Image (cartoon, rainbow, N blue to C red):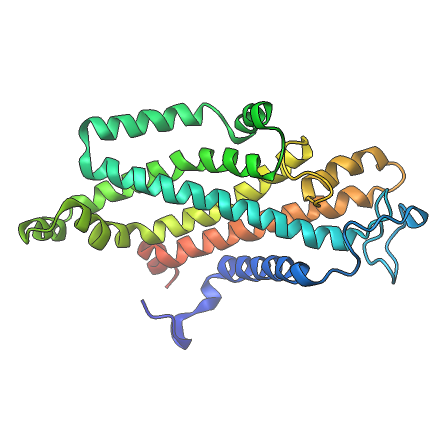
Amino acid sequence: MSLGPGFGWHRYPALIAGAAVTLVLVTLAAVSLAWTPYPVTELVIARRLQGPSAAHWLGTDQFGRDVLSMLMAGSRNSIAVGFVAVGIGLTLGVALGMLAAARRGLIDEAVMRLGDFTFAFPAVLSAIMITAIAGPGAINAIIAIGIFNIPVFARLARGAALQVWSRDFILAARAAGKSTFRITLEHVLPNVAGLLVVQATIQFALAILAEASLAYLGLGTQPPNPSWGKMLNEAQTFMSRAPLLAVFPGLAIAVAVLGINLLGDGLRDLIDPKLRRARA
């Protein structure tokens, strides 16, 4: 697939917009590893609940912390939680989906029923159960979101792999004496990789939203580590005095989720040959 100068990137505005937003998000997270305008754990009560100014572009919170610094550090935590959680779901889910498609029969049925059972426990409910056992924290949020992502990728990988297994080149590979494992790695997985990448971007956006929801409930990232969801939770007490405290983290969550979803939609349009021909 050629993506040269004549490719026509203007036909994919969602991809361009999503990539731009995602790049800004990743850049902010990367910069926050080394620098933020103010230390995120610095408490200065004398400057609490200040509005936007030259010194504090987005104002300060109830403890005098710089809101922009908190948002930058919060983006780092959101990306870390989303990346690891989606990585767990992608790795285990694809492995199970490939196994189910290759073996069929009892193994296929067992994997699908396990997925049905997992879907009965959404990420928030899973986090509540895990928290009751191990206590709140980012690690438990990652585990809960990751477990919920496993059946998503397993079902997608299985469905796409079954279509590939019915192709003529798979029969040719079997006739050449290749094992099921080798056929899966060399022929099936490469043919479904694009679809899995698109789904991974969509699940990444959902993971960021889930992490913010869990942090809002007090089940995710714990203080003093900043989190967009935790910032929203703390801001609701001061809505009458400082409504912008809720606006900024809420806007950050909305823009991040929208941007990554646009990236996923754009990648789908780019990878799917039918959609590419429709835009030609």
